[in-house]
Image 1: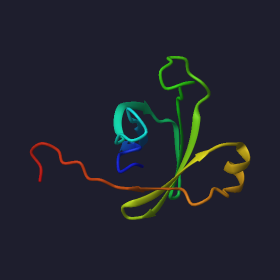
Image 2: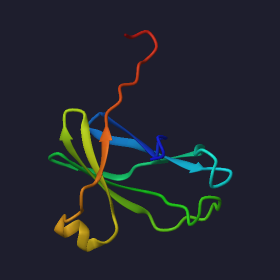
Image 3: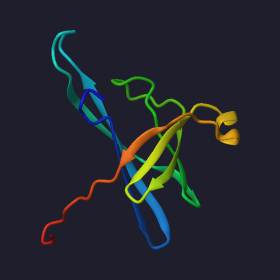
Length: 120
């Protein structure tokens, strides 16, 4: 989005449990002609992650607005593996979408490898 990150999804599997964090990047620009930039990052833990086959469903906490501390209802997501290093992500708007799985094209996610100190 605007050649800047919109989200990062970090998923971990340890001791038979899935956990992770979704990082939302808030983009803004100073005026309509100015370039976009990432103004802030908002990491939130994955809630109730559930894996079934190639599908991961989870929820994240959601604030009522970008600058307010008050939480609104949690937001549900569905992610499906689309290849060895790709997945598709959908925000589930309602229960009917969850049941029918008619979700549209989805947001394409691409795996990035993170290098750890001391490894190649």
